[in-house]
Amino acid sequence: MRFLLLSAGRRVSLLQQLRRAAQELKIDLFIVGTEIYEFTSSLYFCDEFQMVSRTFTREHHEEILNLIQIFKIDVVLPGNDFDLRYLHEHRSHLESLGVSVADAGEQGLLFLSKRDSAVFFLKRLVLRSPRYLALLRK
Image (cartoon, rainbow, N blue to C red; front, top):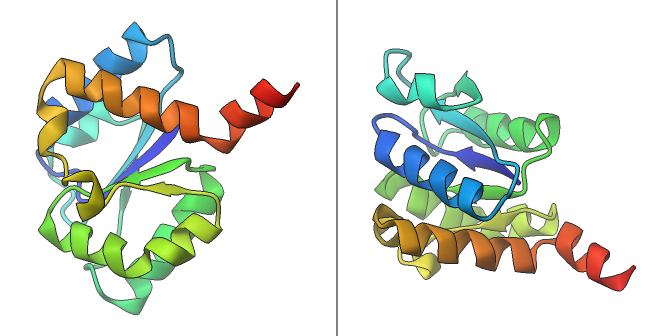
């Protein structure tokens, strides 16, 4: 699975939980992090890290769409409250591109702070992903 974590900033524990859960579930995980500040600790925990414009600018939205296309992103996760709002506002458009969106409907990211919750979250995403459903149809 390919994740885009917006405003990755200091979300090191979230990145570590996602990686542990993916390892436990034997899921290949690739994480692209975004941030508006270049000096963040999560930079070293993402597979790819991209600087983006401030949330709610036209440039930001275009940059997110480009990252989704370039890295073939499956899931977009919010890193902060601004991202929750952004994803809520753009959910329909992003989902029309085949991307799963975790926004306020997913209770934000609080539930991912525990390993079991991260495993449950990834299982749900894998089972709902178009790639998994295509494998079931074969």
